[in-house]
Length: 186
Image (cartoon, rainbow, N blue to C red; front, top):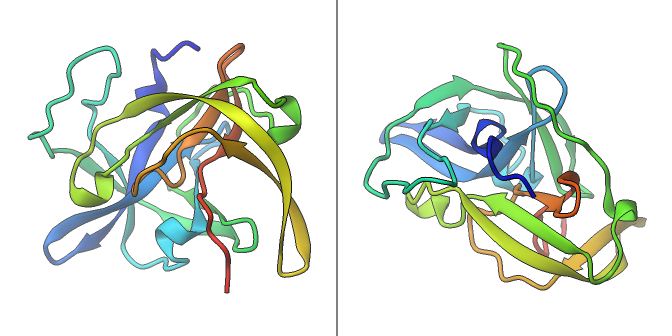
């Protein structure tokens, strides 16, 4: 997988509070103008004061400074939500483009090598873009609200903040999924 340039499509989503930006999880730019994907539980389906946090210092090929919390915020709003599948699409006013090859869980098989790129522990103020290797352990159907959805079971331990992280097939860098965890809507 080519990791150069992922820092230009993978960001954190946050919420402006009286004490500054509260980072909520990972999001990534889709190949449509100004649209980002994350897990709906990251935003809690609350549109108030949402932002995309852009630090500009998240190149995976360099040392990232854990004490540098500087960055810009770009106002974002919830565009679409699928609470059953835990998907939230965010929109920003200023169009941005990504060149992601988008696929899905049908594009992978058990034992395929995948890469997860996101911000584990960003909810604790650690805004460090991190790459992890994993393998598909199983493909399953999970029923929620009477709807069965396709999921990948990954042989990986995720951390708070990684929800919304994109999952890429390593053989061709195709986007095949997103980390949502074991979220189950009420």
